[in-house]
Image 1: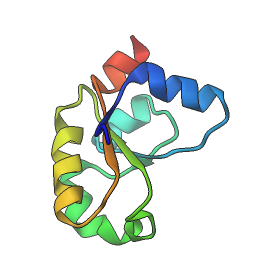
Image 2 (image 1 turned 30 degrees about the horizontal axis):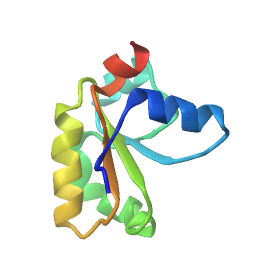
Image 3 (image 1 turned 135 degrees about the horizontal axis):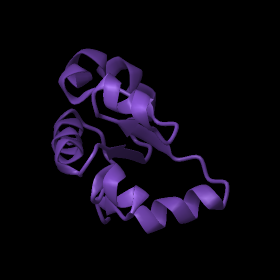
Image 4 (image 1 turned 60 degrees about the horizontal axis):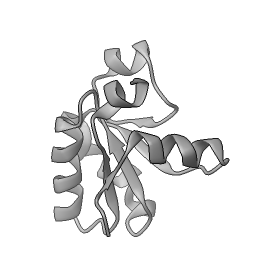
Length: 98
């Protein structure tokens, strides 16, 4: 399974009314400036807040940040914790805003 999701693919799914589980790993201030309705768990807080994601361990989880770098780290961390379907938004919110 492709571990990345493109901004176009995500926009298309949201436009179709899908409600994927999205985690924004940017800092709180970045999230306040603009967000796409995701759950905000900054990358540094992820280890302490894993229990918030436990119910989604085998569900698709889409992670994103500003450019895709922090969310790639978040994806790797979640996979190490046993999450089976974590996808990174390529290019992050900057590409999504395109």
